[in-house]
Image (cartoon, rainbow, N blue to C red; front, top):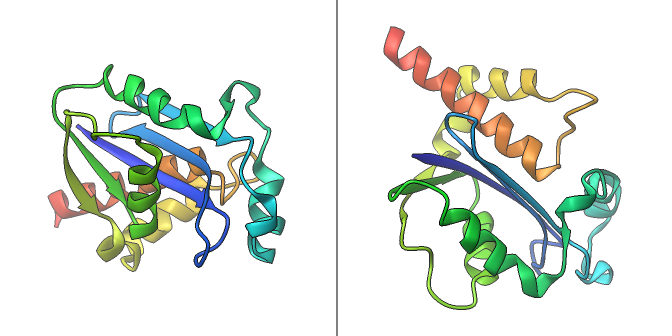
Length: 161
């Protein structure tokens, strides 16, 4: 099973997790968490403008920084025995790794790099179509869903090519 991952974070230099979103390739499994106690003073102006506006939409997603790893680990335990994570940034991988205080989930068996797909028109067009005023950019769950939409469009295009 492929799980699409996206994160938002304070800054590229002083990276601290703000939110994390996951969605499965079939769309049946998702997890969205927002860190309530991240250091806002580390946030660059882009994050202050684009990311902060998307926080707090899902009250049940707001958790403390020290809870993230366990919540993600428990969610992974509900997934099949072989999970491949797909993301478009090394920062996503690093922030996920930093959220675990200990070993990775045993069912996390691989990585799929979405970066080569981003510049393809079929992937990019599907991502653009996914986002709208109700599903804004820079909200990690919506961005993970958008990556899923892009990947599905890309794979469908490969099948018909």
